[in-house]
Length: 156
Image 1 (cartoon, helix red, strand yellow):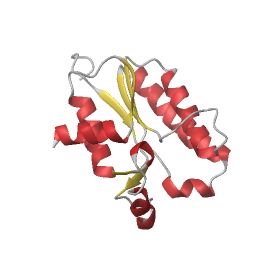
Image 2 (tube, one colour):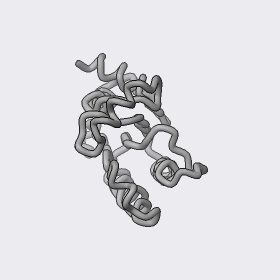
Image 3 (tube, one colour):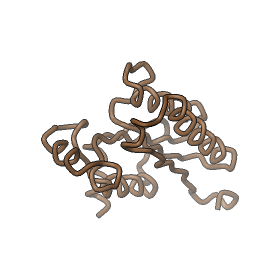
Image 4 (cartoon, one colour):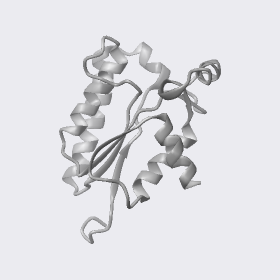
């Protein structure tokens, strides 16, 4: 497909969810930066120019919070690869999966905006909408809960 010039996309939705509390920072970095970064570099080496990355709300490499810091480092590593288009998905509390306790998803519904709950199905549809959208601009784009829900609704 790449050789024919057809659009081909790469995506990483890797995450350990609540298991991240049990992992050391070095173990998280090995997965989030090492494995995900290696996969992204392989995609780019294979001719893929558009990539989508699952991260987390508030991600920054300067955070004092270990998980948020590692997610920020992952974002920086993948940005450094130089994809024509990089869509970074930054969900709040992900509901509807095995990694999020139901009580956390329920409580997250009380939190407005980007830190609140978003359904995993909305995230999945937003990824697909990013892939099939002809309007996706070049460069780096950040999608938080509101933008993911909007793309999900447009895709249904």
